[in-house]
Image 1 (tube, protein in one colour):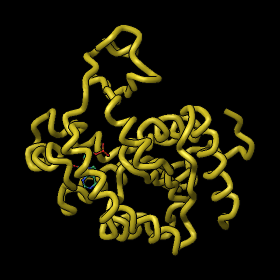
Image 2 (tube, rainbow, N blue to C red; image 1 turned 180 degrees about the horizontal axis):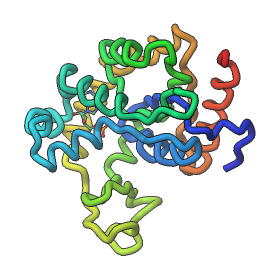
Image 3 (cartoon, rainbow, N blue to C red; image 1 turned 90 degrees about the vertical axis):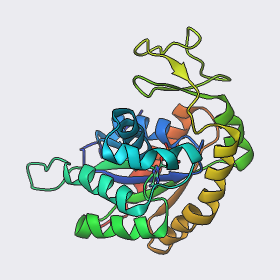
Image 4 (cartoon, helix red, strand yellow; image 1 turned 30 degrees about the horizontal axis):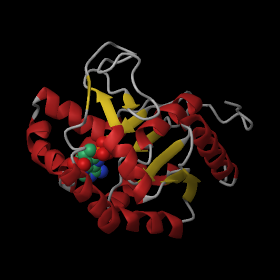
Length: 235
Ligand code: AMP
């Protein structure tokens, strides 16, 4: 991918928003590689905690299974810990990140703003995909239970059915990709998360990217949106 503005210096600070199935995880991985920043996913953090049966995992499991939001106290604590572990560069500036799945309501957006302090955020990117499209994608989505690689049975299946191309682990449907949990997650998105878009829009931080089409093309649009937001920001 072209790096037209030389911004791949590990300092980009990005939030990615969008409906379940809009491609947040896939795009966050691609864009994290481009900008050399860590991909922090609240959903992955919770799934790892559930798998490890840690105290956070035991608390979160029922919410994940039902497709509901884990209470803010737990979620904000998990993200605060991840952000405070970010490395600081030679000039003493904290490193960048791409945050996927957080914030998911206004209280979390305010907590994030307080955590980031003066450095703030470069941009919140809204991956725009219709409900019809995400329903199609979610029913075909499969993930590797070992390394988290994401597949789609329609246009990106694993080379050997049920087996991860990357690590050979088992590729299955996510437990919360059942019809009932998908419906619940999309309802919660409309009531709790959609207002977060307006919250960022009001602060001049929202960029909307068309999430339709092949992942590489979406990623190119995503990179352009981040670079133009960073150019518009005072150094
Ligand atoms: P995701 O992989 O982002 O779809 O997240 C999977 C599940 O993890 C969600 O359905 C919630 O149960 C939980 N989760 C992830 N991020 C958050 C968040 N920011 N706030 C509350 N719950 C979350």
